View 1 (cartoon, rainbow, N blue to C red):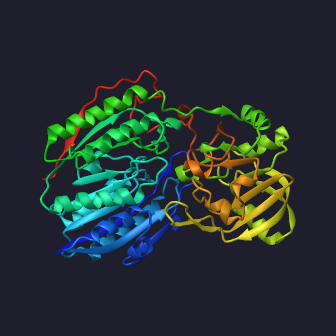
View 2: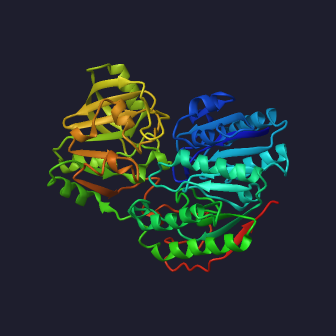
Length: 495
């Protein structure tokens, strides 16, 4: 009987969000509830369970799961508490463990520890020893560091963006771990690509990035690699090893892993200029929206809570009001003080709201007379994963033709769950502000008249040179447009 320990710690941060995140923003599950709450869900652990629970001779040992909102860098105290709890749970279950599956994101960052995943993997190794195989799964927006690679025997990476293959990635990780337990000896090859990317060409179904991903998938299908992927990192997590990178895991064959990783990198590099955000000035977007028949989507990727922004930008709302936009507008905003004021006013109550700039001081609060149309706890299930999306206490505020969904917490806005929790169907509005760089097509783009990627300020702006990177390795494209690459494969083999 092989005993497999299952652990999870996932967070994506923006270094440019001025507000530190805290331990309290994590949804923590301990012991058996890790499995009870994720079994059958479209999550990495849900996918791993489907494979491992169907495999004879396997005993699964749930340890700990921490899944938060994306936000600013994690506070020093927050990471100390989180890491201590996680490692204490691993330590308490360490006896007789034969292997580890660790579900991660890869784009964490903490005050005093810019590689939290590397630290956690080192500590898990110190607890369990060097002989226990460890396989991790990562978001393709993660940053896979040398420190992490020295501790793991294998890695699987999301293959879709927008992400729909959470469970599939966990299942692939589980199958890889079983191969290693069966005697496979792995070599991981990595090629660092000095490019930061953003924009529509990253949509894997239609964009040029998807062509690279399909090459990686072919390597897995035909058996050339045990696992392969291409990570584009999170350009908002400003850490030393921020980059894009090709990853190939082969069975003991360093030459094959190196060759295929270099091929993936060489396939990606020529299209780096295409993989930049194509932004529309706010004034131009508003003028064009005024002439549309049907719904206009204003994508505010610069304030994307799922990428680590604070969610309190009022830039688009202010622009629409200043322009006298007369259509029906649906817009979300994170503003705890406005929600509290709405609760005091009560349903049907009216008050003078100060909206925006609750956290990020680049946004000056916007004063509006509003009516409270709905108050709720702001809880919903994500459309794809079914996991909880918690916006905290929520208020729907009406101002003339504007419907404003005010939230207490920076809930993820990459689907329609918050709008539905607010009792609003986006299809019934003339303009919807979507605070996410990309959503699954059926959620907005398939039925809207036009999607405008608006050039607005914020902690997750697709205008990457405007952000102010100060830590990541340089040169890197597009911060230095003349950056060059000589693809070189690093290899990691623990056995």
